[in-house]
Length: 70
Image (cartoon, rainbow, N blue to C red; front, top):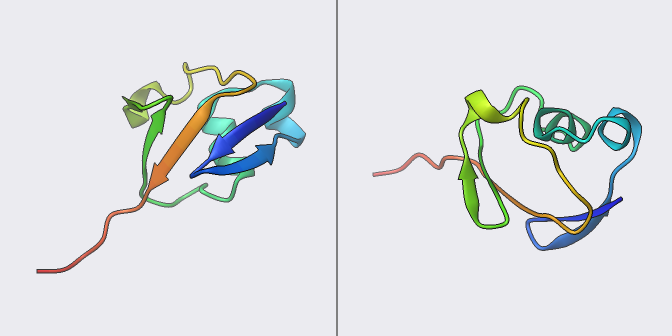
């Protein structure tokens, strides 16, 4: 299954390929404990909904980390 992550084509492997929930996809992509915001196909997905959001082939994920500054 192929998805786009921050504009880069990515093939899902491991647990995310078997059960393509957003939370598992993010772990497989290396975002396990990071504070990030995620949009799937340009729609924000709250962290509380990650385990319920299924990812399909062709989906576009935008993963954004907060930036400190002032």
